[in-house]
Image 1 (spheres, one colour):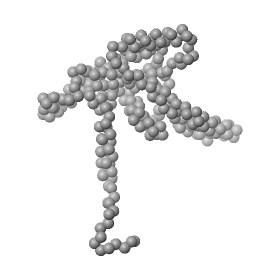
Image 2 (cartoon, rainbow, N blue to C red; image 1 turned 90 degrees about the vertical axis):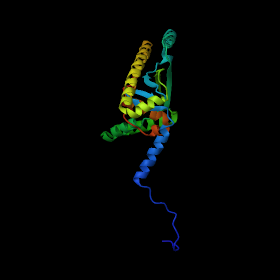
Image 3 (cartoon, rainbow, N blue to C red; image 1 turned 135 degrees about the horizontal axis):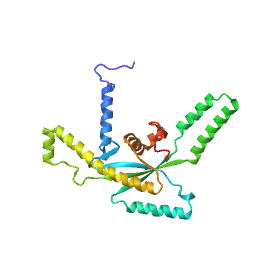
Image 4 (cartoon, rainbow, N blue to C red; image 1 turned 90 degrees about the horizontal axis):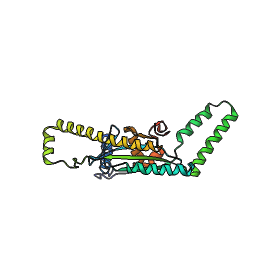
Length: 245
């Protein structure tokens, strides 16, 4: 051990406790959440801090290039009619990300391990290497299409009045119940808009499905953490009922 003069204090800091580390992570997460517009996600609905609500519809794609000229015109006119039928704003979002085949390659490797025929085992291994190199070299991406339906009650404001704040202090249970009632009422209006959008999309041959809470969390995670989401698989993504529509 190095010599230490009498009375000299060391500059070493005590190790951080588990509680301190956890508190630090919670503080960092809270600071990050304050920068986002999302307040909560419940019942398949995104609740924003300004009290607006959003629903997300995932849509299938159409192979427009393989259609005849008449079919293309029919689709374009149908899409135009669909947009003209809407009396409320929507957002159309296209998400492009690099194709992730890690889970598929794991299944191929497992099939290779279980294969008893030597020739087939070698063919399976060669196939896995070919697919992996093809995806890497070609930089293949997948596109996902979404329609975001929104509703904002004009009676809502982002800030509560002094009277409302005082009422909530003395009657917190009533305040919570009022918020739940308001949410359910707003959700009914949102559902009506969703049904209009779904009907219009189906009319032009686009298959669509409304994302539930778990799927919305998955989507937002990939949007706000693109690098991490690319290398981290949160769940059985290919089992999402939307992937094969």
